Structures are given as C-alpha cells and as structure tokens.
Image (cartoon, rainbow, N blue to C red; front, side, top):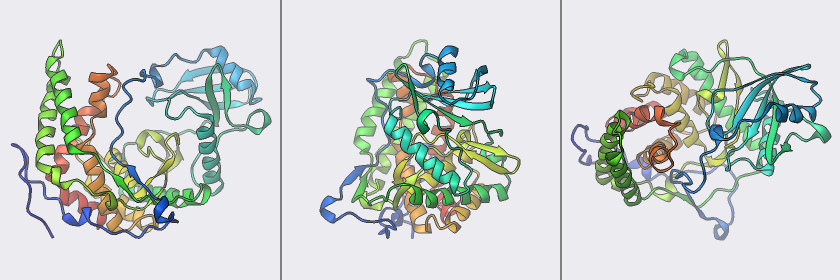
Length: 395
C-alpha cells in the first residue's frame, strides 16, 4: 500500500514512504524487562560533542619509546620497526615488528571508548567470537593475563597482525555479498551468546525535525559566511537548502518510538575499512570499539549504505544490497518486517544527521570532508527511490 506522496522540493521526485514501515509491531526475541523498568531510549543521530577537542588521529602520535615500553609487557622481544596505520579517525594504530613477529598495536584515544572497563568487555567478546570460529582477531594477553596496558594515561592493546586488504562492497561478486550478509547475521547471533542478555527498551525516540531544521539553518549560515568561499562551502550550502526543504515536507514521516526492530548486541561500525579480505573471504572483522546494543537490523541497513554505495554519488548498488540482505535474513538475524522498519529508521536518521558538517563548521575538523558529497547525494537519491531501496532489503 502506498500512501499519498508528500510534496518534494524542486528537483526531487515525490518521496513515497510506505506507512507500514512506521507502524510495525515486532516480536522481540530477547528478554524483556518488567514494564515499569523499561524506558524509551534516544535513537536520534549522535551530535558531535562540541566542547571536546578533536582527537583520534589528531592526537599526539605515540613515541617509539612508548611503543617499546608497551610491548615489553607482552614479552614479544625487542621492537624492530613501527609504522602508523593510515585508516581510522578515532584511535591510533601501529604495525609493529618485534623479535617474535608482526603485530597490530592499538592506542585507544577516543574519549567515548578509551575506558578500561569498556575495552576489557570488547576484548572478552572478541575472544568469545574467535572461539566460535568467526574471523575476529582476539587481543594478546600481557603480564598477569591482562589484555589492556596503561602507559602515560593512555590505554593500549596488542593483536596478531592479519594480512589482507580492504575492499569496497561494489568490488565484491554476488556470492561474496551473500557471504558478507551471512557473516553479519552470524556475528549478531554469536554476540547474543558471548555478551550479557539485552533487555528490550520501551522504544527509541527519533530526531525531532524542528531541532534538525534549526541546526541545518545554522550550518547553512556558516557555509555562506565562510571565507574564502570554497567548492565545499558551495556544495554544503546547496545540500543544506535541499535538506531544509526535505525536513519540512517529510516531517510527518518521523518514525514512532515503538517502530524499532529488535535490540541486540552489534559490532557498531560494520563497514569496508573494518573488514580485511583474504582472497574471496573476509579474513578479519576489526575495530570493535563501538560494540553495544542497538536495533540489530539497523546495523545491517546502515552497513549496506556504506558498503555498496558509489563513492562519488552515494547511489546504492541494489543488486548487491539484495543479495547481502537475503543472506543476512537467511542466517536468522532478522525478518523482512524488521528490515523494513530498519530502512525507515536509518533513512530518518540520515535525514537528520549533520555530523560531517558539524565537524567542519563547528569544530574546524576537516578529516571527514571527503565523505560529504556521497553522503548527501545518497540521501537525496534515497528520498526519490525509497520503495526500490525498501524492496531490495526486504524481498
């Protein structure tokens, strides 16, 4: 059933968003809290902390002497060579060679994840996944069996070095897309076994389009006032004008709190730069910093938008998306109606998300600028082709 289409801004085809995606009653497969103890959680896109200084790869590099000191606690012999790993924005990583071999040494500097308790929980989960035969590198134990080392106020861990290469989803054959969807489904299932049971929340409150419109208007003012006025500023102003029109015409499509698919443990950041391929197979799923509970089908949808997009236009390869989604569902990780709910909620999240422009204009951090053109283009295309995208994820 297709409802009456809202008006779209100039240059856009009418966005036809099926009502059924916002009115699902889903059977949660995980334990429920008593009604009085359940609460509605925030499900809106996270806004950058504007008070926190930009860190991650902008943080001071780790001196070679500190790398050597950390490695001593793992009894791997002398440090022979060390080179920073280029990928990643939030933490620092090094390929280190010692007398015992080659390893990945990770320095946790992102404020949201650089916590001993959280890191230890991640390590416990990855060890459990590896023990179940999944391609997840587990950290090495150091002195006293601990996998986390603290030095100079920073936390470190050492992992086996895994050979392989990053591959964008559009480089994968259809059988590899099948395997990737099945892998994510199996990871979601195994996480239920290695992590504590998750109680279903009462719902997830999504972004308020009025707040988003105020933020978009402020960012557009900043883009217009930027000097020198660059090509990035011109594109930002154009896309923010489009976004304001979309927020006004599609505000009534805001998902209700109870429309979320079932919550479970997720990787939290499943995309191409966190996957290493060896031949035709995924050899390693990396970077478990954002391990946590969230609507699982939403991770499946969100990952597909990052894996199978054209890196210039953002347009999704829907043939590959369909193969990936069918395999994910066949692994028992989600039903079609859960994927439908996830498509609607991730679409709404993207409509209200401005993190790249907030980094650029409010924090003066330009590291994510290259991602903006495809991200904004994908949203505009999604609003035009909503039903085709929904079909690719659910049929």
